[in-house]
Length: 141
Image 1 (cartoon, rainbow, N blue to C red):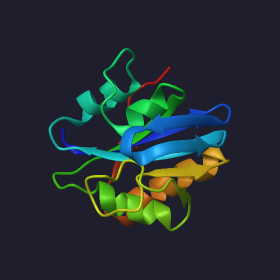
Image 2 (image 1 turned 60 degrees about the vertical axis):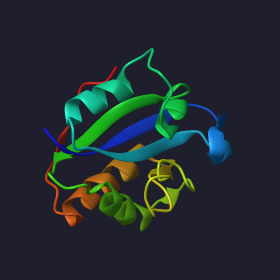
Image 3 (image 1 turned 30 degrees about the vertical axis):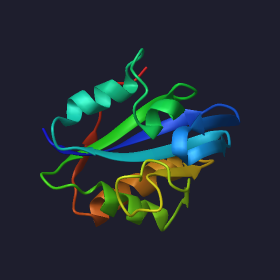
Image 4 (image 1 turned 90 degrees about the vertical axis):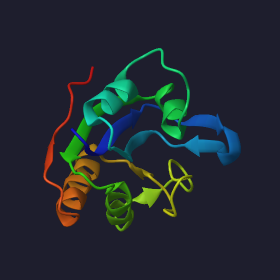
């Protein structure tokens, strides 16, 4: 299955990350939504993100060493829609500049909210606005 996904992530306390060319980031405690796509295998990509002991490759890998995925929202699409979803989320939540968007023109693919329920609702609405039928993702610990 191909598609777009959003990882809903909990950062339990303020953290500082050093991410290559992106530099040093300070992230507040709270909840984050990370938007991605996998046109070569959605389930495998999401499983990689929620799995442990992986090679650090993407910006999100750095964040996931210090946080936890608590939910995944995904939708099947044959086209790359992650940027449309990210733009929709950006209308409502604070972006983390440059995060996850080094291969596109988006301002960010990572968004912050202190409130999990608000974050989840905005992500689900963004999928709908982009014409993607969302479905529950994988079970996460």
